[in-house]
Length: 193
Image 1 (cartoon, rainbow, N blue to C red):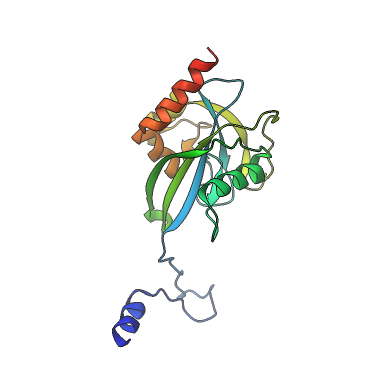
Image 2 (image 1 turned 30 degrees about the vertical axis):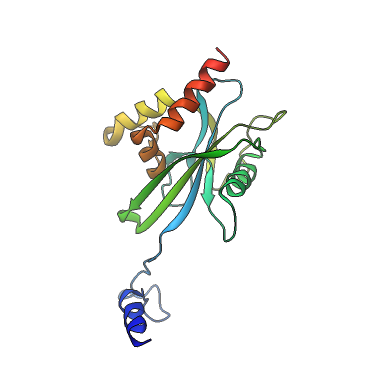
C-alpha cells in the first residue's frame, strides 16, 4: 500500500493553491493519455474526397482536421464516430463503419498526448450535405482529396497565408498513408469513375 502511495505521489500533477492567476501559479499538466476518434467520412458525390474543417477555439486552432472528438466512458468506437459526426456535421453514418488506423499523437507544446482511432465510413443513404453544427469549434466542412491533404502536408512550416496546416493526428495519418485508408480512398474513386 505504501509503495502505491509513493508512486501516485511521485507522478501526480499538482497546482498551486487557489490563485490561478497569481504570477507564481503553475499550470496543471494532464498526466493521462486521452483517446480521440477521428472520422474519415467519404464525400458521396466527389469520389476520393473526405470531409475536413478548420478547428477553432481549442488546441490545434487554425489547423485542418477530420470530424471527431473524445471517446466517452463505456462508448464503442463506432458509436463515438457516429455521435461525433452527427453532432458536428448533422450527418448520420451508414452502419459499415470500421477502424482504419491508429496514431500515437504526442503534442508536447500543448502538453497533450492522444491515441487517435481513425474510423472510416460513408453517410447513410439519403443524407444531406454537411452542416456546421458547432461554429464555435469549426469554420465549416469542405471536401478534400487525399492528394490535396498530401500537398498541405508537404507545404509544412513555410505555408502561405490562408492555407491551413494539418492538425497533429491528421498530419500523422497523411504521413503514414495506411494501406486500409489508401484502399478506401481508391475504392471510393473507382466506384464513381
